[in-house]
Structures are given as C-alpha cells and as structure tokens.
Length: 96
Image 1 (cartoon, one colour):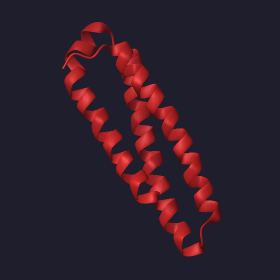
Image 2 (tube, helix red, strand yellow):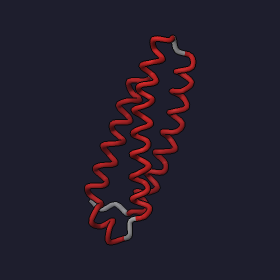
Image 3 (cartoon, rainbow, N blue to C red):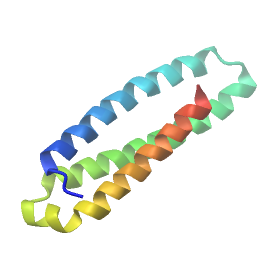
C-alpha cells in the first residue's frame, strides 16, 4: 500500500479538523441533555478525546518521519490510523 507521507499527513489533519467540529456538536448536545444522559455523553466524549489524542500522536510521527522511516513504518502506521478513525466513527454513531 503506497501512500505518500504528505498525502497521509494532510488526510490526518483534515480528519482531526472534522473531529473538532464533531466534538463541538457533542458538547452542545451534552449541554442540552438531561442529567442522566449527560453522564453517558461525557463518557463518549472522553473516548473521543482519547482517540483524538492518539490521532494527534499519529500526526506528529508522520510530520517528523523522514523518507526512510516512512517507508519502514507506512503499512503499520496507516493501519493504526485507520483503527483509530474507525473507533472514532463508531463512537460518533452511538452519540448521534
């Protein structure tokens, strides 16, 4: 699977911006929720924040990887990022 480091980096940056927008929507939903629902929404939001932090760590690695390092890490790293992204999508689906 050949993915350029720059393209992959831009993809992560775009997805993280999208995540930030979604987090804001969830925070608004939490503010309007009943007390019993707030706890569940806060828990889901916490999971999303953890996934976002993992995504930012991924971005940091991609930003600092040289060409040789990227060639070595690419397949595992792309798979790792996709797992993080799928997990975030699953949480958002539960929160909608």
